Length: 352
Image (cartoon, rainbow, N blue to C red):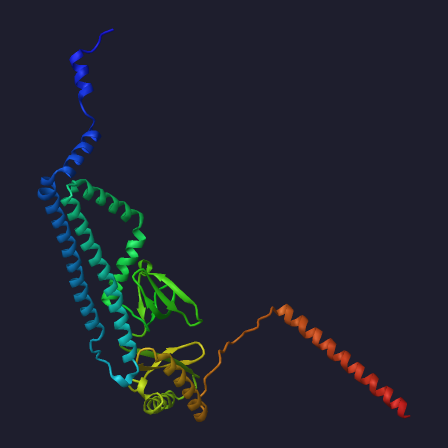
């Protein structure tokens, strides 16, 4: 069997291990005054400067962001103070500004702290290329694994920035309809009429119907009988609308005098008249209920009929069935006559 050369064996035995060499170098550096003043101290100073600069930068950016959010939340809203909507609009703007402010604060903190850590690692001599590549791979993996979560957050950001809806709005998001109680980046909370609190993921909202933004409208379709004088019914509805618009109890919620648009449909059992009223957001349902009640009272006073559903029924039978029914009716009548005659005779005999 061949043996290795003695020179090779001696060289292999004398080569120090990498770990041992690293420990030896570290011990030598720690014991060296030149290393402390020439290498360690300048690096420590630079690291301290990086940390201080990052903290100062973060503080400045957060202060500017806080001031911008406060200015946005306190900005003047072009809404009449006596409309009852100014408070809702102000609360909505403050909530939207607060949510966006929290988002931007987190983004600023993450970016500044990440840059600080990378600069410190570079100052310590680490190779940043593998770290950045690994972070990119992890980010891609998280992106694929949490696509729905990312979609929810992005949708929430656009909902807030575009002001699609806010706290106090009545919206229809498809699966749920109700009053918005809170808008977060991931979910929206809706309170329905029956009291149910719906949590809707922002990424699942495909369309939004906002029923209380800027202004609202109530549409009333009132049916009257076909024999009704339509101009008379329209005049009665118009009078009710004018009285409603000048009523001190409801005049603040009305933007325009209610209008009667005319005949909307010729239904199977009624002539449908359409009336509309433009109101402040969120008051359209109250206006519709009050108007229906007053129109009903006005129609009753003037004798205008609001008909029930009417149907005409035809009964058809075969001739043979009709003849059999006539024969049966005639036999029953004859029997009734015979019974009446017998009863009369019995009474006469008792009297005799």
